[in-house]
Image 1 (tube, one colour):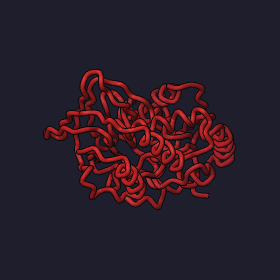
Image 2 (tube, rainbow, N blue to C red):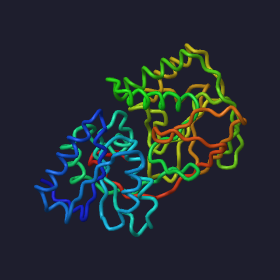
Image 3 (cartoon, helix red, strand yellow):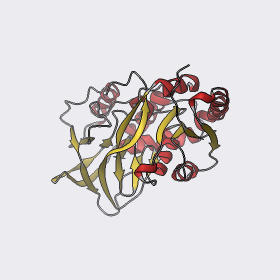
Length: 314
């Protein structure tokens, strides 16, 4: 068994993750760290009960060396935002035991998904890296921010998970995507400033990424890496027909959409986005709904220490 010393460790676990499987994963983690005391100087497990609990717990974790988020991207998002409330010198490293449907941040960290035993082994044998974060208005994001069609699909998958759909991950995103695409696409006019350059268009796809995937593995920004001091954007410049949009949807799944004339990809540090009053598109940040009149997005370089798996390619 690897002997990485995580120091004083707090595990913040969502027992409802993955249709209740998070509870069993939390029990396993508790037993593991109780049995292998050499890997921590102390370990505490706290279960969330409601939205906001994970953020509150993480924001008070200044006495810990490591905080491990157990759950899906939603609980990780909360933990990240809590940790960012702490002074940099008191900010623990972040580990992840991914137990979700999409698990896109875990993909970025090259972690095994929905297998707590392997995830813990990867935390103990992995490498500590420093990653950037994105920030939109007052909210940090570790993986994705999107508007319009992208966000509508992401929020639909969240709603379906809350209603206990049996579909997960990529399959869930595909079925939500096809459903929303076939409803028709009016688009949302936008005005953006990207590193000082003004851009206008119709928003069907508008995703700002810290890691390459969203939707359970769709490679929307395939060149995105979370430690280059930049955010990656994929945005639409014209409205495709429904058959063309469905074809693009399939290409995005594999990251083969990058040459489409309907889309643009670029790397940025600062973005401002506005939509006409009364015509606000859906917006999601790491799978959570966000509503604002104006969106100011920045990269936060070298913001957080995380543990990545040994096979992480970036």
